[in-house]
Image 1 (cartoon, helix red, strand yellow):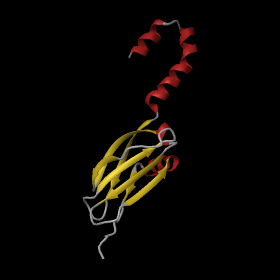
Image 2 (tube, helix red, strand yellow; image 1 turned 90 degrees about the vertical axis):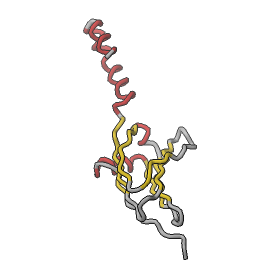
Image 3 (tube, helix red, strand yellow; image 1 turned 180 degrees about the horizontal axis):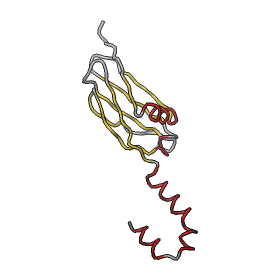
Image 4 (cartoon, one colour; image 1 turned 180 degrees about the vertical axis):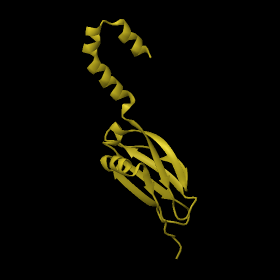
Length: 129
């Protein structure tokens, strides 16, 4: 809203000069942010779901707990960061081996665009003999 007031006050020739800068600022501050829907169903249900986004800038990233399966959620993600990142999702349940899925950033974005979201149906394997 403040930017709109500034533009109205400035003469038009200044606005024309500033327009590329204003557009660049808008792109950098959120236009690259998307609502990403996740649908995760595991066998067995009730497994813990965690995600890690590792960018070249931060070599260590915390795992974020997303919830228990079945999991249907929407998460805001910055595609400018995701494009260069490695995204790892892990499903865990006691008595079962963990299942992990890893995307390189461009693959994650491509899957999101092609399917309209991120879908995963891992089948956990029991550790019992």
